[in-house]
Image (cartoon, rainbow, N blue to C red; front, top):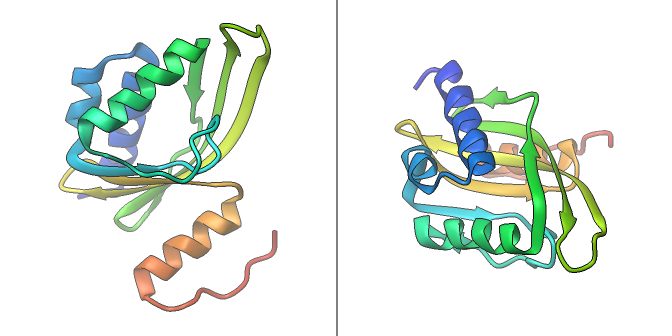
Length: 144
């Protein structure tokens, strides 16, 4: 798949999330996809596997936050992956507290669909993880 196609599938997935369109999201995400976004509003490190669990997470977050939005201005192609800095914002329905969060998401893409997504706190962390998965060895340290 061309890198531009990888960027497009990630952008379509973000758009589907923001529209709360489960059918559109399913066209961008493989049926057995695994999403692991540690630290996302009390989600811990438990992976979400498959359409039902991924969409269940979206629905749960939507119940807890009003005006929940995900924005990813830049999607960086990286081989069979893409790295996207995301800004997640919303307001707690019960508390009224504003949520502003940034996470770097590394998406693995196969056959035009996201097959895995993992959140990282920093861009260097996402790149190190990508290099380890690509080359099977520890990646060199990167400046933070």
